Length: 258
Image 1 (spheres, rainbow, N blue to C red):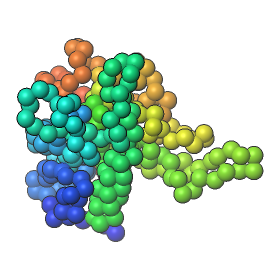
Image 2: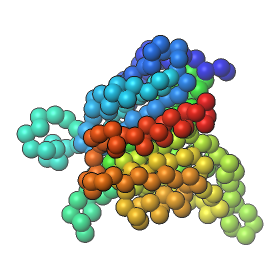
Image 3: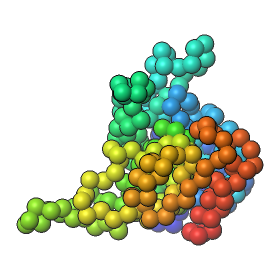
Image 4: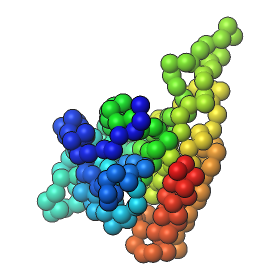
């Protein structure tokens, strides 16, 4: 069916399972793409909703989504007085590094974001296509963004096992409009285990990631653009110079698929 212009009412069914904030282009009828924003560990959808309003991308409906689980108060910054959320299936400690495991599993988040929001509402109810959707995330949210894009290349229903025991699949898969990660590595738990998998055709922008993390992403995606800022900290962009490659990536993707 032809894509329908989204309205706030279309997303009301997600209010209890996937709280979110919407920023519509002006006018809403100009919508040609959807950007799903995934915040970092301990944050909420509110800060990314503000970020989306600041970008104000033409023709883009920005959906800032809240993490699927609350972060325990003991892990929040002292005296913050606010509640934070995360995307993991669990909170696991990396004993060797003394910090939270960067890959706690993202099955629940994948079901909510990809299953309920993208497939259920955007595609199933409104008639949009996966190629209309971009993912943007910071930290743990960036890992989820890359993981969702990675998983699209495999369609589990068509996986077959041959007589010699090897597995194969229709790996043409699906392709999203693009995925941006600031400081979030691709989780191994979200890399398809099909041995004959091909690289994902979804385009990726990787910002402020280590060489080893970049190598992993390049093994799983055909088109990876890498950005390293002058400063070493992993943070949201602070100025025009840091924001420029992100805005250029968005513009290139909207133009190439437009």
